Image (tube, rainbow, N blue to C red):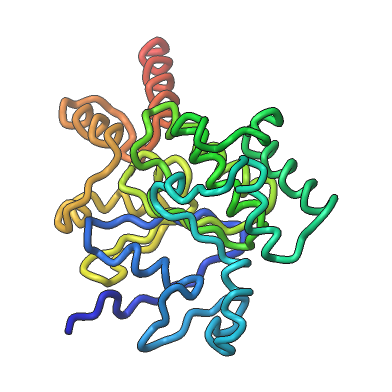
Amino acid sequence: MNDAVKNVSFDINQGEIIGIIGHTGSGKSTLVQHLNGLLKPTEGTVLFENEDIWKNAKEIRKIRSKIGLVFQYPEYQLFEETVFADIAFGPKNMGLSGEELENCVTETASLIGIKEEYLQKSPFDLSGGEKRRVAIAGVMAMRPKVIVFDEPTAGLDPRGREEVMKIISDYRTATNATVIIISHSMEDMAALADRIIVMNKGELVLFDTPEKVFASAEALREIGLDVPIVTRVFAGLRAMGVAVSPNVFTVSQAVEALVQLKEGAADA
């Protein structure tokens, strides 16, 4: 039997946003399901705050309240009669009630842009993007110290993708939670991640800043991945003899580089 994940070892700092990329079957989802104890490693340990999460198996539910996991298409897991009740489900199971529970739900809804008047609506009356917000809010309301997203923008249009990534970024800023994101979008990873894990055949092959990971374009292509589109555009410009930086991975970096190029041409 082949190992699904093997020889994987890394440390993540509090408050970081970590991206995980890799082709289908590379071990990304298996890896993150170990982080909050949905899967138990056959070898090695998963440490949270320097303690083995399986030290006391009876306490694994407490770990899952501290390390939240948002599955792909989380809106399919909505089931309560109202938006309020869906967001409140996790915190209620943690023992919150009354005013404390109400404040938790309303604060979380406000944090990620769910209008107050939506709280008494059925989640099934909302748009797809709004449903996803509600599903994400249900995990965020538990105030996990670590929150893991498995393809959080899957199936969304560009505007929806941008909104979800902003929600994640704003949540990290507001709570200093650690965020881990599986994504096929190199653009999202370049714009949001502090560091990126690259998986291939169940192993970790790169773990570094977006700049250093995407500078390894040839290594990425060898395992079926690519660099952001804007990086490929700038590589094409360099091939044409245009003096642009090789370290452009986001649209904002591209705009800045082109402005500098234009200003330099004007001064010449």
